[in-house]
Image 1 (cartoon, rainbow, N blue to C red):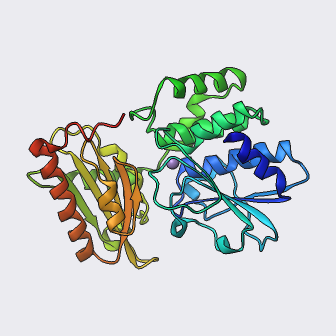
Image 2: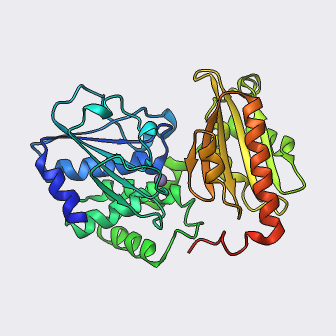
Length: 322
Ligand SMILES: [Mn+2]
């Protein structure tokens, strides 16, 4: 399969690397690392990594400006469905290729490499670069590691396996980089975010089924001088709370005129509910967008039911990922 991917890349002089809307470090780092490696391997090709960036992740690298490309191969990373691709000219691509670790939603290209068992798209790319002997350097290795560390929440999930650590060890040894620097770039944040986090902790609602949630209005966000992404960015900080099985941060996004929903779980499977509300994701980490807080209430009700069923015991076995 890797051979097939590389052969397809060889066929095109222009390659555009895109990923999902709502940039995150795994998707972004995957694009940047793949772009930089392919640029070293194919210096004559035009290879761009595109999509809306975020000042939050500026330290991870710089994306390219979208152009009107001709005769190009579109590589879509970390994105299971077409509507979530952050690139305006998807339909103009001569061919589309998908590399992803999300549960399958739809086929978008003629070559699709999907491995749901992988911690991150960056882990897949680590394996791809290594096996295909594609160029790497300390910067590329560091970028790939950053995406992997971020998506696995620093090796916290059961998508992390012995091969994850083997790959990390291989890259760290061959292309040394500073781990503290990686974590500085990924996790440094202003104190206003800590204050918002304190507010969320203080005001989190909790149902008897272990669903915790907060709805942040634009007014509250402004009060903390934060933005609509801030709440979601700290969703992982609410893990390992005894009483909480599933937790949700719903933030009003006035710019996009909708509500951003971030969901995490310690057991119940949540991505099917996310999909029902125009979102998606992994079994225990997902997101969605709804039009208003009323719709968010419906989603919360569905999640509460998921929690309730989980507690009832019908979950235990099905909910363990292997
Ligand atoms: Mn990912």
